[in-house]
Length: 284
Image 1 (cartoon, rainbow, N blue to C red):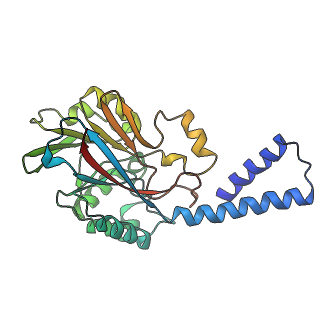
Image 2 (image 1 turned 90 degrees about the vertical axis):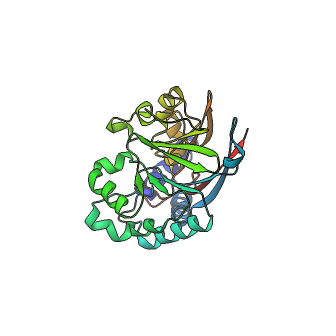
Image 3 (image 1 turned 120 degrees about the vertical axis):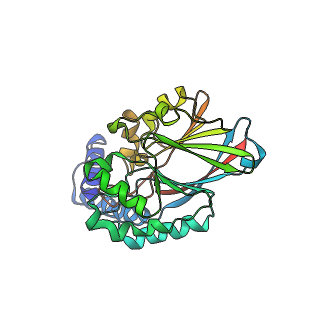
């Protein structure tokens, strides 16, 4: 599937350049597409550690340096199995985060089929816990089954609700919403919340940022886009998504969009590397 899409783009490019389809041109096109497919398959299996500094106004000293590790869009399924997940968890734990956030699309399949392969997520370790919010793919399969399974593994599920995390005298409010396809409500997630020094929202889709900014959050962590995953979709995705990847400023709120830790569909990444993200809060 990945090779076919790269071949289509390559052939379209030769047409634009008005190259005659000689044997040499055909060989070059097919060879280049095959080479890029091989490179993309290797890159898809090697997520990078991306370190991001997020400046927060009036951040108390006790929360300065607070580190959130984000995993997103693992898509555990037919081609992403336990060895890959084990390696991701080992690298995540080695970064020694204060808190772990898993922002949706954990698996593509049913719990009985994939329980063994998702199990390593139960080894995620952070002093202030691990948290999960649903993505759109949980609703394609069995959202109740997956939320129960993640809770069984010791990962707290936030469904339009919040928790207060304390470090010294600092208070961080961590909220999470369901996917946009399932009555996501950033305002309801902080209803009745006590005072806090910083508000962080976990929301699978970046489009939640507009409601989150209106609700008074300081930072939103999202995924969903995969950064386009591979060429040319990493360019075309910008036509459909207001935020594609990286750190963005939306008025008074920061938004970070992960390119995803796994991949969906073809086991291929080109121009949109997979990532394990470590975000550090610092005083603005």
